[in-house]
Length: 82
Image 1 (cartoon, helix red, strand yellow):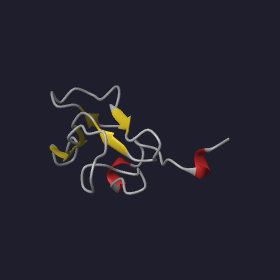
Image 2 (cartoon, rainbow, N blue to C red; image 1 turned 90 degrees about the vertical axis):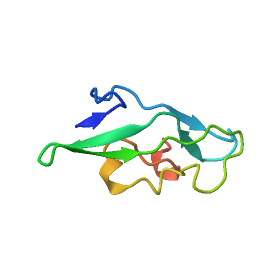
Image 3 (cartoon, rainbow, N blue to C red; image 1 turned 45 degrees about the vertical axis):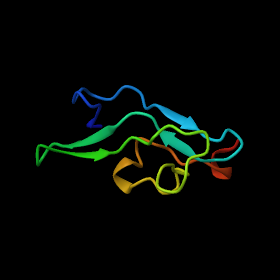
């Protein structure tokens, strides 16, 4: 998978924070990108501004993850429960 960090190194981890802890919403704590090999171009996912109670546009429920990142960020919810 050609996912990269801000220094264009292959991505090894994704920094996500569940906020608030009682709700299934998350914030991306570092910018990540997808490197398109055929076009030598990077599509970036912006970092969220850290907040205890983030507003719309500054959080994700992971159900609205862009399709390009589906293989990297799994869905979250009842379907992932054992």
